[in-house]
Every structure is written in structure tokens, then in C-alpha cells.
Image (cartoon, rainbow, N blue to C red; front, side, top):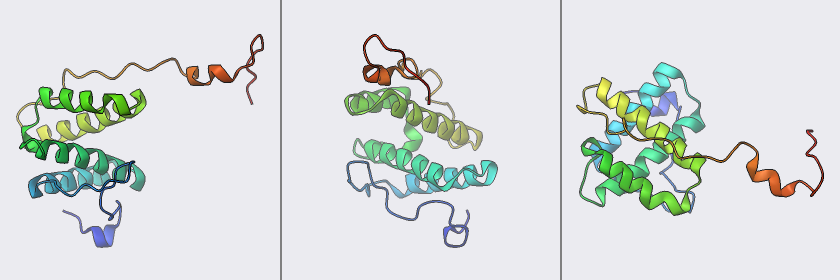
Length: 150
């Protein structure tokens, strides 16, 4: 594993949610696997520091959610992921849910490749439906007028 002090490619701060809560209850095994995954992403794809921090945050929050239910990241099932997304649904936009799904798909594909797990629990999961691009701005168009590009 890379030495984060010399490579400094991801946030060294504790994982903090958008609502300001800190996550500290991830079992050591989960932390080590998340670290290894982030290291692999950095080495293989050179992802940006902010992207790596977002991946770490999403995985850490999920691992903490699992830990609160007495489960480990390596024990994740499709049922766990569906329950997690279901609990997050009310407070999550489709774009955020899809980003999390992308993170989980990449993580579990990596874990399968590294033989940490034997089956990918994300195989049957589908992305959340999003409205058409720009639909969120339709209320800003004056009635009877056309939207003019800048």
C-alpha cells in the first residue's frame, strides 16, 4: 500500500458527510479495503484528489451503515445495497444515487478482480431515472418565451 504521507493523493481528513456528521465506526477490515481500492484507483487511473475523496466518503458511509447492522463490506449482498439506497432515497437526488452506484460498482468489480469477494452484488442494480437534461431550469423560462443560450 502506498504511503499517504508522501503520495498525498487523497484527503487525509476524517470522512465527513454533507450534513456535517463524522463517520468513525468502520471496522478496520473495511478501512483497509477502502484504502487498497483508493490506492488502486490512483495507481491505475490517476483519478483526481477530489474524486478519490468522494469515492472514499461514499464507501466509508456505506461501510459504517453496514457495521451498524453487524455486517462487513465483504459480506455485502444485493439486498444490502437495495436497503441502503432505499434508506437514502428521500434525501438523495438521482444524480447522487447514480454516482454512489458507480462507486459501488467499481469497488465490487475491483474486489472481485482481487478475489476479495466471489460475486458482484451490484450486477442487477440499475441507475436511478433522471429527468431530461435541463428540465430543472424550465421554471426559469418566461412564459411564451424561448430559452436563449448564453
